[in-house]
Image (cartoon, rainbow, N blue to C red; front, top):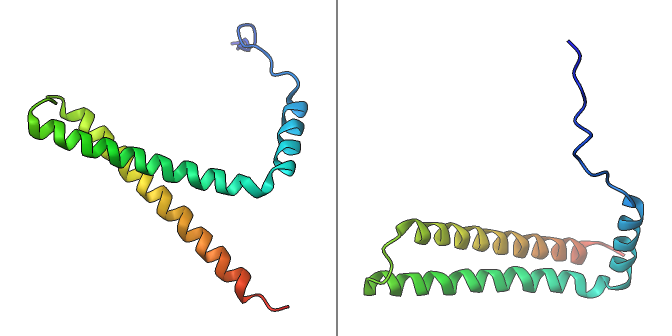
Length: 104
């Protein structure tokens, strides 16, 4: 039995090296703010999820929210955001300590 490839409906990826080249060039020009942007983005996500959990708690107490699956999903998002923030913080502190301990 012969199997036909499924290439007829799938668009081909073109200019792949140029996409990576542009991304690499952009990263080289703005390396100093890249980590701070990522760290602030993770922290903002953490704050947003905590704010949403507080709003959900108030809404549940006031009887405005009947769907507990939404609250559960928001709690899961908040848990993941906290774990991500703590993991990035711990990795940053560990890298800083390794840099400090290097001998010159």
